[in-house]
Length: 242
Image (cartoon, rainbow, N blue to C red):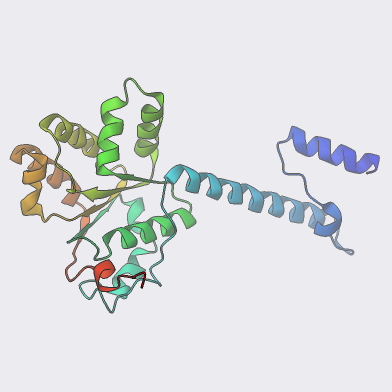
């Protein structure tokens, strides 16, 4: 490595720029300004790549799901066209919510995760959590730095996916924590909810009709609601050992 290359590396480190293989990056015939433009473009690409990787890591999303691989032939209560329209994610800019309601294994979490990945790919920050885990974090935020950090990230995200709402009953105190959380995000961020309960059943697992009404009032004010039906996909397509 000659002195010029050493100097460039030192300057790049000082400016917190990524070290590059300049011999591979630049080709003969480029003007000085073209070389600078190419260098900055590559730095920007690498910075965006690192930002995307960090957003994905912080999102706690499960394995990637896509709209294309979803079986709309099996789940006919929702259409591919509807999901593709939502995949532009412009609804996040207006803090709209989405709710997927229906029995287990009809594709609620798949579609919620697919839309979350679409949002990530478009530069939005996303956070994924089950309701059970969210309540645990809310209950321990004052004594656990990990829970407090996670709640802070939920609150700053452009989109939060709350999965498995209604799978487990919650106490009155926990329902109040959930209400406070939803209220804090109201018209500030988008929420995707997946639930195996219809709205009429929410009071049952939340344990309080007043709290239930207040939570739903905020969630559905600006919201696209999908009532999904049908047999469970996993049961229908179960795999056996023999």
